[in-house]
Image (cartoon, helix red, strand yellow):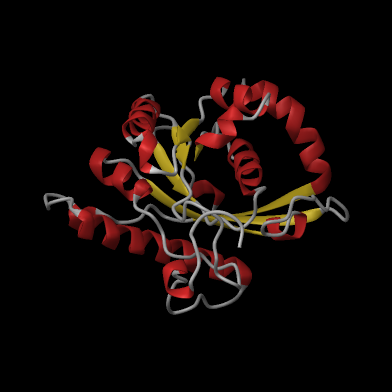
Length: 235
């Protein structure tokens, strides 16, 4: 299925996008991993999926369940092993976590956006993160790799629905070292531990993004709840 998707998507995508990779050797070429990038455009998953494919691994995502209900797209998502996640608690979290565990047990990679939605930060810096990625990493000993990219906003602005393919865009992708979570080993994995580990992950992503933007990340991450914003939906 990945070869089918690559054959259908990549030739057209390559007409619109060229990549520049920084630290590409840091993406594992075998074994399980969790890759956690920043998120600021609806087209980010395609951009990251193509990047990971070019770097030699098959991309799998934990994606919002509503996408699996879209005709044709939902079929491709299921056939390629993507993992549906309910944003509310009504659907529970056990099913996607079990599916993710199966992927990592087979030595596959999972891409998880720790922000859970497009960033609300007005300057497109990563906002406050959610704990899903670090929970999976800590509970199952999976390498958690921060990642950042910059340039997709030129192809499709945040909350935009129209692609601007010309002139051809440049997307820079930087891969970081696995987040050091060794100090959590042997300690209770409570909400505070997950929150502290998530903050560490978001700091790593912000630092990587600062490198490719040639800017210094803000000292404090954007918190939608403190700015009268919801964390999902358009703003």
